[in-house]
Length: 363
Image 1 (cartoon, helix red, strand yellow):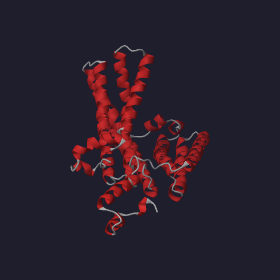
Image 2 (cartoon, one colour):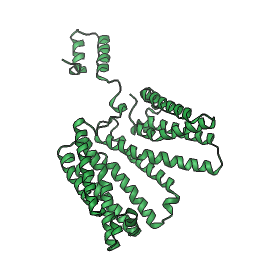
Image 3 (tube, rainbow, N blue to C red):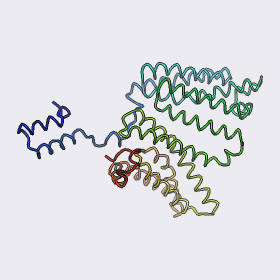
Image 4 (cartoon, rainbow, N blue to C red):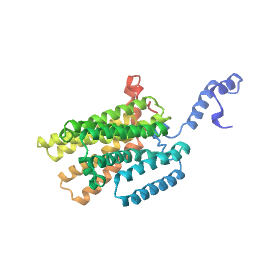
């Protein structure tokens, strides 16, 4: 009989029968609980459930090979509208087999990721062919296809592609599909703003990216709050939304801060300090919400900041690169190995507050 077979009631019955004393009961309960508890909980491990075995990888290799082969075969038609339309239909058909019937995690993930871009490119090139008349370039060059379409048409096409991607998610229920839909909504908003004012997106892209990142982060936290134990599909949806939100937040914030420092004539040392401060702030948020994806997007800037400090100290390029990699690797390993105790101390002041409705409890 394994330790999981003994319930608390069983042990209390042993106490009533005189087999165990109350202190022995507590000691044995603590011991059995320790056996059940892994070295790191499933919450803190932030498990990814889109690969279940090498069978998934094997099938995924076959899927990618088939789709790339189909893509290159259809290039002989010199008609990108036809090519991407066939790709989108093929992805949907393959999803029926591997996502809906066989429920293979990694193939379903790959097909969900590829469906929106294939659909969007298909509707753009097909619409451009009708708008461009007999011009062959409208079916062969992406920029020519965009130029052949008015802004309002591009908005409708982007919304339509996003709606079809939402239908794909509704049909197959792959968790990453929520992030795909979110990305489609962001593209639709960008197309709408560009149709209203062609210069606005270029002038305010960092602010737009920041807003999009905050929106994606908010939706991710909403899904996280529904599954604080990280055991259901809501946790997977939240993970991929964090994975989408993190680069939008990190890169837009860095661009805004660095552009402001450049305009004020700040030196490299000050810029490096600001970049390091932002990375530390990201680390704080990542540990607090228990999502490493937020921090991963800032690691590149951490390395750049260290390199700038070394360059200011007139360290040679070879030595600077080596030291940067050593510091970056040490930072990742130290934080990763100490994640659980660091998070326990960080979350402690927030115990009992409303914040704990949205983040997992410290293990």
